[in-house]
Structure formats: C-alpha cells, structure tokens
Length: 240
Ligand code: G3P
Ligand code: MG
Image (cartoon, rainbow, N blue to C red; front, side, top):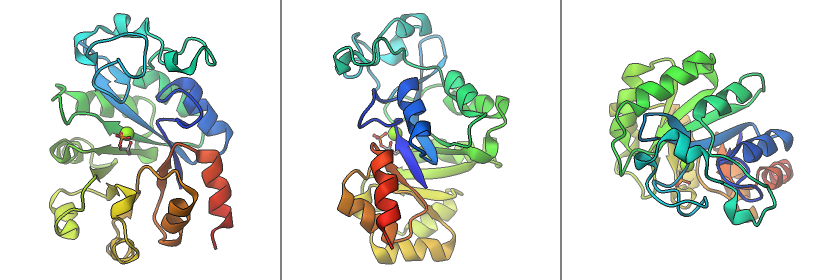
C-alpha cells in the first residue's frame, strides 16, 4: 500500500485538507497524519510541537487554544499557492475520509509532550466514524502504543523507530503491536522476510526516492509512507 505522508506533502502543504484530498485524487491507498492536543484539549493534525515551521504563527501547540490555532495558515510557506489552509481537527479529516476507500495512519506525536488522554480522544474519534478497521495507530512513544492496545484491541498498532530495534520480534510481541514502522534505511531484505514470516506488518518511512522505493517494494513490505504518492504509484507498477 502507498500511504501519502502528511498527505501528499511533497507537492501540497503538509497535514492539511488539500494535501489529503490530493492523496485521494492520485489514488493513494491511505494517508498518514500526525496528531497533538491544543491547550483546550482538541485533537489537531500537525507534525511539529510548535507551529513555527509550517504556519504563519509561532508558539507551542499545547499552549494555544483551538480557536487561536485555527486562525493560522498551514500553507503559509507555499507563497500563496494554496491560499489559507487551516490546521485541521482530526474529526474534520476522519469525516471527510469515512466515505472514501482510504486507510488512515494516525501518528500520535507524544514523545516530547505527554498529552493527557490523546490516546482516548483519538480512539473515540476513530470510533465515531466507524473507521476501526481502516485505522493504524502509530507512535515513536511505544508506551503510548501499548496503552492503545489496551484501549482499542480492535485497532492496529505499530511502533515507529529510527534506529534498528534490538530483538524486534520479541519486542513487538511484548508490546503487543501489530506492526513496525521503521526508517527505510534500516530495512533489509532479510529483516523484511522475517517480519513477513512472523506476521508482523512492515511499513517503512519516508520513502521518496525512486531507487529506495523500488527496493522497498521488492522486499515485499506491506506499505510505504511517501511524500509523493503519485510518483510512488507509477514506480510501484514498474517494479516486478
Ligand atoms: O509515520 C511515519 C512518519 O511520519 C514518522 O516520522 O517525523 O514524519 O512524523 P515523521
Ligand atoms: Mg508522521
């Protein structure tokens, strides 16, 4: 499967509705997005802990109310090409996604900041739209994924990692996760084959270059995350 990373973030403002709609238009199988909580506890879709890089504002997401955050332009770095794109609420994305065939990977961005009840709130929204079977919950915070396993045994969980994990097969079992989302550079053919044999889903991130993509497809990974879903589709078809 091809997951459009932060939407089609290579060509559209990351984690915005236009980026998600583009992913659907080019035929991606799913979208990936990042969630955090505002000061007043709303689940918003943004990658960094601060709004500085991606919007015309500055400050921490955790210190801003939903209303304050909504006034910002998440397309500010695109020189007016996409006009004003607000930071979406997770609910807005899920309401849009529900009638589409898309899957969604919701990455909980709770490594630096322990957002209170981010897991519960995210799961509740997924349930509200009946998306349990089309949702993968992931995080670099593996304790959070362990909690999600308890809260939502009917949803898929995956552990994100940048460095290779020590004894990943024991670890994934102990953490009761369904999949591993490794940095693509740490994935080898042998490792991918072992994962498949053990029934552990593997979805490397963020695969943007043609050669890397073809290598991942040839390893038979379950999915990739890419900023360029349209390109990825084409290169996937070319891979034997
Ligand atoms: O979920 C895959 C990928 O998004 C993880 O890294 O930093 O792009 O959120 P990051
Ligand atoms: Mg992410």
